[in-house]
Length: 223
Image 1 (spheres, rainbow, N blue to C red):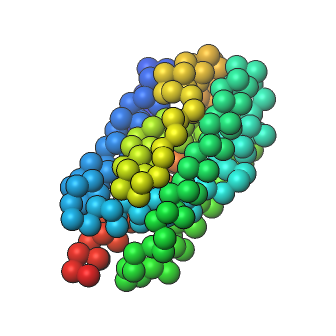
Image 2: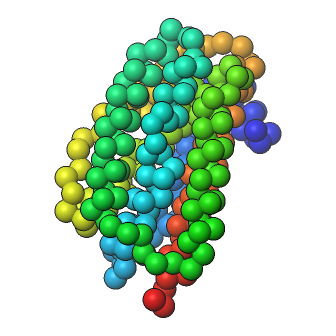
Image 3: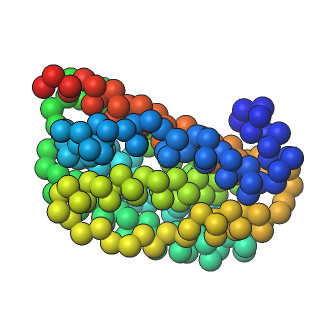
C-alpha cells in the first residue's frame, strides 16, 4: 500500500480513507469513463459494448469477489452487508450477461487476444485478493468493488440504453452503508491496513481496465 494511503488510514480512519481512495483512484476519476468517445461520440455504442464485454469477463463469473470475501470474513458487523452485497451482485451478473448477449461479438480490434489475456490476469489478481488469508484484505476488496460499481454502473446503464436492454435498479449496498460498515469493524491497525490494501488493489485493477478500454478505442479510431 502506498505510504500516503497508509498514513490516511491511521490519521483519518478507515472509512474516510476508503472514501478518499475511491474519489482519487476510482472509476469516476478516469478520463475515459466521462469522455466523449465512450458516452456521446459516433462510435459510443461500439465502445460501450466493448466495455460491457470486458466488465463481464472481469466480474461476471460466479463465485466472485463478494462471495469469496464472505467465506473469509468472520466479523459479525460485516454479515448483513455481505448478504446484501452477495444478493445485489448476483443481480448485476445477470444484467451484464444480458448486455453482452445484446451487444453481440466484441468489436474487431488489433491485439484482441492480448487484451483478453490482460483482463483474465486482472480477474485472477482480484480473485486472489478476495481469497487472501490476510484478515481484512478480502473484505477491503469487496468493499472497493461495491463502492466503485456505482460508477461502473453508469457505464453499464449507458450501454443498456444504447442496446435497448432494461437496466434494473442496483440492489448493492450504497457507498455510505459500506463506509459505515467498515468503520463499525474497528479493529487493530493491521486489520485496517489490510482492508485498505485490498481496496486499493481492486481500484488499481479497475483503473487498468479503463486504460485498456481507452487504448482499444484508440486502436479502432480509423476502422
